Image (cartoon, rainbow, N blue to C red; front, top):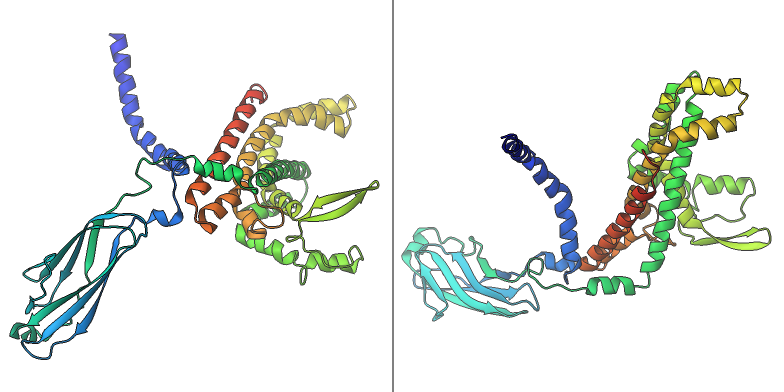
Length: 418
């Protein structure tokens, strides 16, 4: 009896959760599955619009009195150069008082409705059909209406590359064979790792500064949130203006103090040579600026979480450390840092995922040029710049698997209990 009741309660629970499951599937799982589907199909951007017959009509001759002939030309073509369209039919509504006199077996008139059945069209099909109509007094009694007032329509059936069962791995082959893929993957990892760590470290430093009690603390905390709440397009263009080699303030200050002789194009220069202990290092200039922008824009997110965790650390632990004569560095290392391990690991997970998928920051700053093309920018280039939607989806699937591998390692080696 108890087992039956538990089963009924379980069924009721699943029934009540069904709307939630449906919403999650539609919002989260369906786009992911659709991306997987597109990645193994030969889909280009133009294939999103299924092939269809197209028609335009022109009036070849007009009628001035009853008995005159009126000729309408229908210019028809297929929107596809290689896909067959079946069951092609033309529909049009004609003015009253017109009688079809052209010997066209494919066309019939029922009352004022014209229907022409053209059957199957091969790719690239084109045809002009001239239909002659004899006018009657009823046509002129109706005010000789414009025969082209009613626009013709066409209907046909064509296979859709998105819904058929033709699959291929060519998209992945092209992606891996692309000479830009592996450099983009390396740049993505550098950008993600250093951007994530920089934003967390900067947030930790800001939280340390604003954890103390002083006048204006609330104002400064709100001010520190500005980079995160500012619109990304405004922040990116502000940075681009400040770093502009001709009119930017950064170059003006550097030249004023003699730090550089010529203006530096921070966002368009791939590398710059730096002498370090006798070694010349090709420093990635544009990528470093993009990483710096990432750290500056998203450190408030880490700052909020870390500051909240700071407030929860018992103060008597610090008081006991002061009694024992612990230095500030020892207090941070043995008290603060262990208390922050959980929130820092969570921040690293979230920021790593978001930074790895970040597109708008890089696209607005550099467009992926000067050694800053990440895999997300490559998704855009493949899908829209090159109109290869399948290859773009394949790159997105690769991104998904890389993140999945990262999450497996993260949850395997994350601190216990965090």
